[in-house]
Length: 186
Image (cartoon, rainbow, N blue to C red):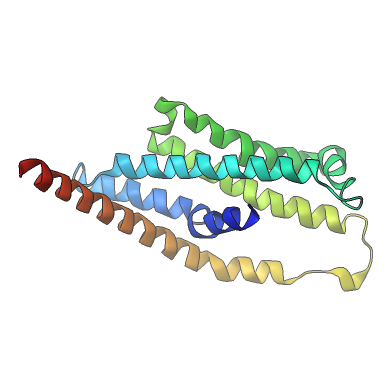
């Protein structure tokens, strides 16, 4: 289950915002030339699927904890950094489920808001894990300083990947549309 979530996260979720921005830009430039609505629907269902997998992983993690980790979930939810835990929980696990509402899911601006929320939830998850781990760990050799460098290095790749995914999705939808027109005429 963790592998499925990480594959979806790496290839699709990290580059949602540039993908949606690219689709909005293509809609503004080319009006109704491409099938933007179908592409946005695919993105919405990708977000919903990712959220459901994350919920399942979250509950499995809560139920099957070892003795060491039994303290982690309640402490993160009620400890001194509870605000960041609940921000993460709402942004990454509750807000994307509003895409089940068809009117909201069909709006590109709302999908962009959910993508920003999901991205904030992912980064708050990292924040919660790192900060609550360091909260009572006073050993100087326990530090992990490579996180910032990896973040800055990956941002350019994420935006490029998002733009490529948007263009590929539009191209595939155009091919499907042309194939259906040819198939229906024959």
